[in-house]
Structure formats: C-alpha cells, structure tokens
Length: 163
Image (cartoon, rainbow, N blue to C red; front, side, top):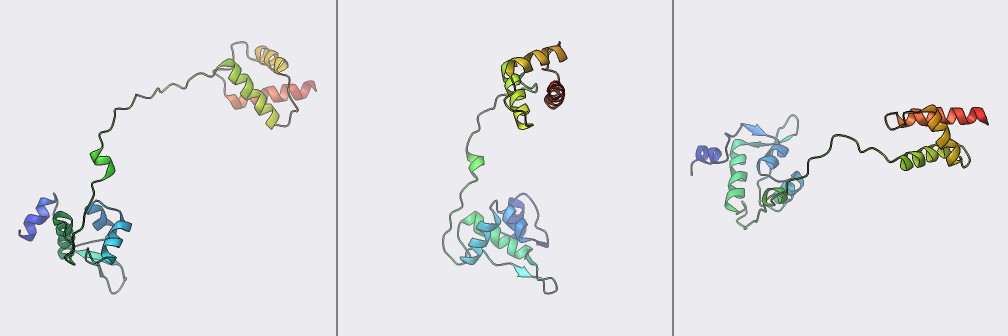
C-alpha cells in the first residue's frame, strides 16, 4: 500500500510534523500507553528538534505508527493487541430527561435546614415552634420562593433582637 493510500485510509492527510500527544490521539490511545509502547520497542520513538528539544513525529513516522496500529505488529516484529475504547463498544442506555425545575423542599426539611443554619450561626438549640411561628409571621406567603440564605439571616436577626 502506498503512503498516500494509507494516510487516506485513516480519514485525513498527514501533516509534516505533529506532537507526541497528537500522535497518541491519532492512534486512539493515551500518552502514557503510547510511551509504554515506545519504550517496549513496539512504536518508533519521536524525532527531536535540536534547538527546542521538543519531540515530534514526521509524516514518515506517523505512517509507521498508523501501520503498527492497523496491522497489529510492532516495529520490533512482535505482535501487539490494541483494545477498542470502552465507550465505543458498549451500547449506552438512553438516560431519563432531567427536570429543569428544582424540586421544592418539604416544609419540614426547610424548617430543619433553617434550624441547622441557626445553630451554625451560634444559637444554642433554637426552639422549633418559635422559629416556625416567626417564619409564618415574617413570610405569610411561605419561604419556598425565598432565598434560603436571606430567610436564615432575617430570622437570625429577629431572634437576636428578642433575646
């Protein structure tokens, strides 16, 4: 197979030079796995730019790497097995559409959350009934549509004034 034909079989033409990361991506593997294959003699090592000392793969080396991947035989002549990506072979189940609306908290959990917040602000065991009555007076329409932080701050200030 000619070089041009092999490059076209991978869906894109090869560039003059690419980085090690790009070569690993082109082969559908991690850089760590790619470096292990280089050290094992399966893949060819990169060339290095003298001035910058950066590794790169020329178009010829890219072709060698692609050939190793396609044929399953390393440049050292040993067979090598490449597994498919985990996500590509497993059929994914369709997920449920997520609700965009936040679930409304139950009144009891809101009161519990408010009581916990008051404790964290330094109140010693706030009375649940007192807090419930105070909230109903301050927010006659309820606190479900209010910011929890604002409710906590206003209730805390009101209770501190009564003390």
